[in-house]
Amino acid sequence: MNNATTPAPARRSFAALRHPGYRGFFLSFAGAMMADSVEHVISYWMMFEKFQSNALGAFAVVSHWLPFLLLSLPVGALTDHFDPRRLIQIGMVIFMGVSLAWGALFLTDTLEVWHAMVLLTLHGIAGVLWTPTAQVLLHHVVPAEDLQSAVRLNATSRQLGLLGGPAIGGALLMLLGPTHGILLNAFFYVPTILWLWKAPYSRAAAGQGAPRRALLSLSDVTSTLHRIGSHKTLLSMILLSGGASFFIGNAYLPQMPDFARSLGHFNADLSYSVLLGADAIGALTAGFILESRGWLAPNPRTAMILAMLWCAALAGFAMSSFYSLAVLLLFIAGFMDLSFNSMAQTLVQLNAPADIRGRVLGVFSMMALGLRTFSGVTVGLMGAAIGIHTSLTLSALALIALSALLLVRSSRS
Image (tube, rainbow, N blue to C red; front, side, top):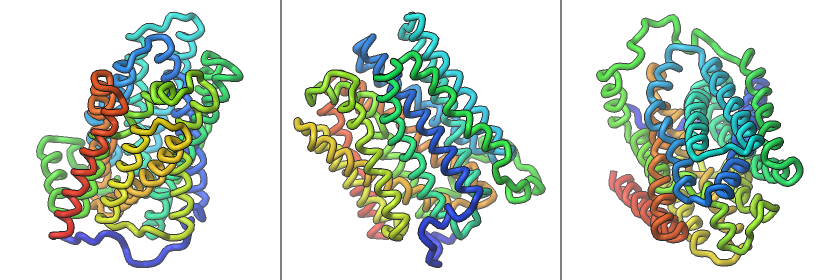
């Protein structure tokens, strides 16, 4: 089986943005990610203010990512059968409903722990209808020769939204308050819903004229996993992304109010928003620099080294007692995060067999996002027991060890 890591022809910088369809994809999905991030900024702060619970922050991670673990492969199978645009629209409507529900609970001052748990879970379900499905939709929006550019720019679009989220969320907290801020946020999903009605999509490219295979069966799952396991590039990148998801993921973000207080900042002001946005700024910087300069061509071993550097930056952030140093390390972590994650996803999308592309990307999402469920334990719940600074440091060291093991195995092969 062909285990090539990436096609050879050179590509123009920002090649995907030369396609009108992808420009709409980039802007609308950046807006949706911004709305997603705004909701986190406001809801995480309100939950921490009301309940002062690191355990609830850990549940925010678990409930957000558990649907990815359980549903990514079935959703991937759905995209092999049905129009991915409609699946994403359903997810956007759920996102809107969750923001409106938060706003109603804040307005009536009736928020209880079980309300937060239900809304966090619904938010996770909406995410799994969006993320792996959007990866499949990319193949309809740009031609194959520009897919690598689209994948990296898609990661940049995500970070652009994550960057705007803390800035907009912090501004809404200060100017409108949490209730009106999160109610307004519900309408930030509307442009994406409207764009998806006429987004580029080819039924022929989706294989709808080919004989239908089972939607998802046990034999289908085992066959998909066997084909992934026989492909060295797919297997190594899925394991690397799964390890990053399991040990760290983004579990430190719900704990950011606690990190901010330990650094001497106790209010939901600009300093809190800067901490939340620092790694997003780093990731955004990485996306534009790497795409414009053509640096860091996709290579499995390069991805592993970048993952180790990401861990080192996060461990330094966890141990830092100086606010400015913490911001700098989060910036570096964001740069490395986008670099290795977009590289891993590029390698998976370029090497996924066309006939099971949705299923392979579902497995990738299950590992790269679903295993973040357990980062809520490794960082969050363990942080409640031994302190979040120690738990994040230990989790980063564990991922360094795993990445080093994969790097050694890759070098030997």
